[in-house]
Length: 314
Image (cartoon, rainbow, N blue to C red; front, side, top):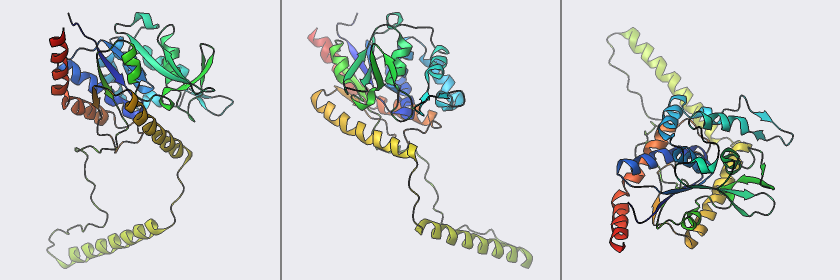
């Protein structure tokens, strides 16, 4: 029996959150124990699924649905504030992979973070209605409506504590493995795009007719390239509301995370290379999972050294 506790902290990050699945899989493949979980926003959701034993089922589902199902708004209703009420959708998705309803039913201790909309206070949820707590922690500002829970209006925990290392410490973790999804590092495996101005080689032709046809296509291609270049030089359109909100939240979370890490550093920090993935890109599921797995695998030796140190102390 382990004489120490390993705490896993799963940070916020919207669509990047599927990387958490890869992180957990890499830890399990390496035989690294996870004794407790602290999560924020999508990290709270994945953490709850893991703590209830439904991670493999969730992985198969999101890959098959390519992630769009989680935030498909087709059956969501707009409330008076103009924001989305995602309660029904979240419950449906969670209940497809877990039959747990309350925190005390989970196989692994879990705490999730939300924020008090009025005071800006840090709210830790660890008892009672699990789904309501997840809904509060995932109330992305400007998109989902806040939720009234335990006498407070709560919003996404990412606005106060995107990677809640301190919560895992308070839960008794001797070793904290934290996952920060805000890294701007780009995947080494991304496909390089071919430049628009690159020349397309015309295959050899055997007669005049084909030569003229090839020349005509070359002329059309040149015209299209020139028009594209002209469009690029025109005054750019302002970004849409979703892009603005997304960028603002991401910048804010990055600053908060830096400050929080200075106060509560983790023992191991995992930063999947997701810089090419926007916060609301839900069509990159397998890419996010793979990057989470790779980033964790690269830290396994460091984790094992920490575990050996703990065992020596015992």
